[in-house]
Length: 153
Length: 122
Image 1 (cartoon, rainbow over the protein chains, first blue to last red):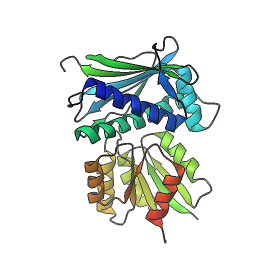
Image 2 (cartoon, rainbow over the protein chains, first blue to last red):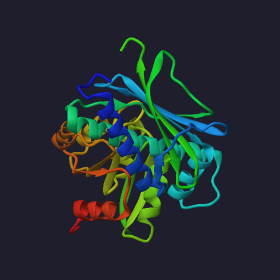
Image 3 (cartoon, chains in turn purple, yellow):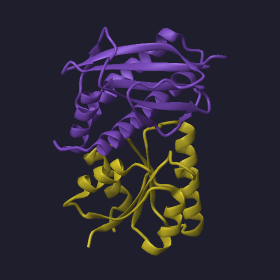
Image 4 (cartoon, each protein chain N blue to C red):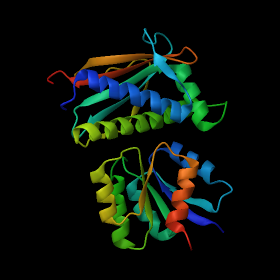
């Protein structure tokens, strides 16, 4: 990310916003985890454009995204399409709050693409993971928030 | 009949959430458009009391769409809905003639208070 923020400060912003938004949107509490989700996972990804040239991905146990969808939809029965749509909207809100928080510090206004949803793990081409934050939810679901930057950055 | 609301947002999640929040209130969702081009085409036919407009959408974004609707219909009441809170975006929206901002995630009380404020006294 081409800002004057240190990687440590950037991680703090991402971490704080992710915890706040996840609890506010879905009532799911995240705490620091020590392992990445392994088996039945999904990933939601969005690239920043204008201002920042990087992208964010959240890979999590499918069970966590399903619970998030149930909470947002206030329904027990949800479809795969519901999980995809609600997870994308949750990530849209998350990225918006991150971009707004970064703007407060850097005065760099960025936009981000409409989030994309993938079954399994996803890593954008031509980008490398700069850092990742691992979480464990209040139901022991795993999640990994990754910040990707271009190889040339 | 309640006040008539048009929702413009590429996410059907927002439509579902707003419809639920506006159930049994004095507001009725009469139109949902997933992109700016459709909203511009439909506005004149629907003539809603108020439009809620997402900013980030595929194709025309919400600011461009709001500008186009207001050029054709200067009395249109448009409320921007976004998770982005930049001073320059808010200033641009105001300069176009939109009424106010609602920040995501959506909150029922905030939504109703905003609609009441913009449409109050009518």
